[in-house]
Length: 270
Image (cartoon, rainbow, N blue to C red; front, side, top):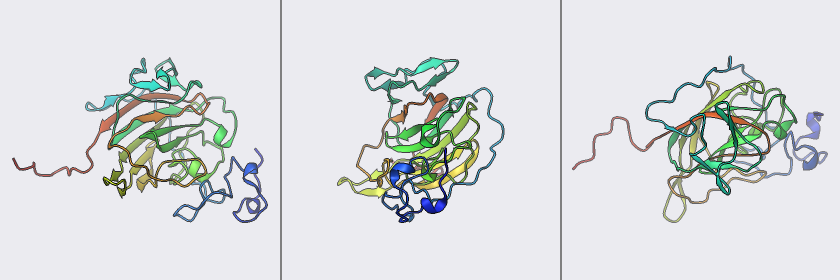
């Protein structure tokens, strides 16, 4: 991929149309509250940190976890026309251009564990290399991407809250190596009239390294547009994106949480 000089990528320069910078970002998108454009090519990319060796066999989930994939069956998921049709083999499942899949069960506040691996050999560049995503409520996305030695816009790389907030660091492993996301997600709270009382928030650990700490989510993740909130229920499915790349997943589990309850709260009076 040809890397353009930074002056050609700066917003307002007039020297780079959006069509020439899809891997590195866009200069014609609206501004986020942070002051950066959505997918801003000038936004600094997170520093690279080596997370250490990839895990071997999957670590068993905690006793109170709801297992979403047991290594054999996609019964916990559904596809766009009924049963999930992603390929299952070798204790993992793989996107195969049959469309996104989502959990049959719905979740609100939760702790989510996901393991994933991008294709090897790596093909493509930018957003066209090992692209997928993990969506809470079908709409709040933690980006999955091969960001190992692969430049793209900061808010679209692996572990970004897509289109909003880049990860603190880039700890992506090499293509084909297993990677982990551990997410604590607090669902948004809405008033009866649809007003947002509390935005969604997420803490994300990528390969054992903190990349988002109690980060506010600005709304639904969308490409090239500002995020907005649309009122929805207290629970929703967890979706995995089929972006056309054969990204693999294994060892998915979730723990339901009540993040309004204090750990030492007294029992309610009878």
